[in-house]
Image (cartoon, rainbow, N blue to C red; front, side, top):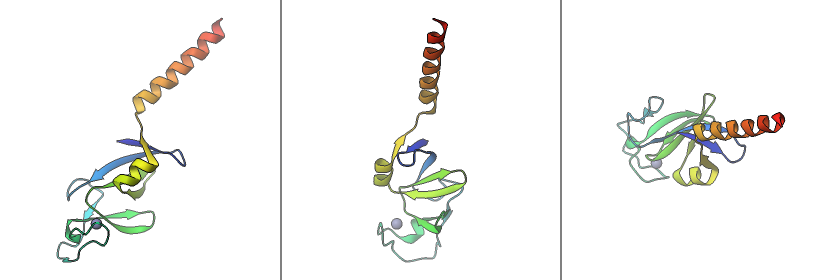
Length: 109
Ligand SMILES: [Zn+2]
């Protein structure tokens, strides 16, 4: 899915990560771990690991993996709703085309 960040307005590829195997670029956390996550309180072995801008970070189940030009950022469901809006590429292109069509129609007058 594509998302547009509100500030700065940049287009990201976003994918929700729920469990191991969901996304190729998320590797599983240490499967022998008996720790619980300090953020979501779920077992750490249910978590993934992502190489992010800030370094290697654990991924909580249900987190969004946001990617832009090879850089990965993690986002919670709430963060996604606050900072991003869904980006429909086809609609955006149609909008652009409509505007361009209007412009060229004006020129012809
Ligand atoms: Zn967690």
